[in-house]
Image (tube, rainbow, N blue to C red; front, side, top):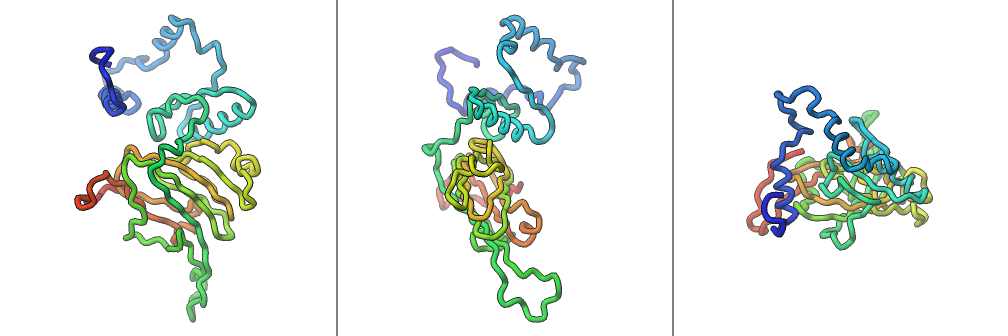
Length: 272
């Protein structure tokens, strides 16, 4: 970084310095010569420092979709086999610190600044409407006892906050929690019989510490996740990822806002 070696930098100033560099993941100069972004220079650098990448096993995961989930599962498998696992991700999901990680360092409880609870519910409409035509819904699909209202912001959360969410399911159906924009880290999962789902349910094995934007919440289960709100403001949604449930009202609106004195809260027009 520029300046004296003794110069003190905050996390924000370090990120600002990095952001001033050209991001070739997003913009490749039209004048770039063929081979500019090949591996020749990288291999030359590695050779100059003794090819350290040949001294330990590496799994390289590439593609368009599913890379993060694949890396999370491979990490869990290798750790369960007794290996110490390092991980490098590019680009990162939520925060730049995720790019280099040894093991699954969780968002600690000390970082949490807020608590959220969410319950999936389905209740029968009783009595059914008189003379209702066939196909009319006979159940209410709700989150926290309410059907989706597009004009209602259910949760207002501060940019820079760290929220711990407890997800539960009080219906007879499984539901898939999905939240837009901000991924979360899976902290714990408990079965209906109060067992550790990471060990008791094969569908949850490998998810401890994993970063996700979707997770199954079985009947009677309790899932705890944590997430940081660091990059985006505006409104977005969370919902059950089962299309029929979402369409019948199992959804909420969330707004991430810049913290300000209550009297000066601006109207947020960003939507995601």
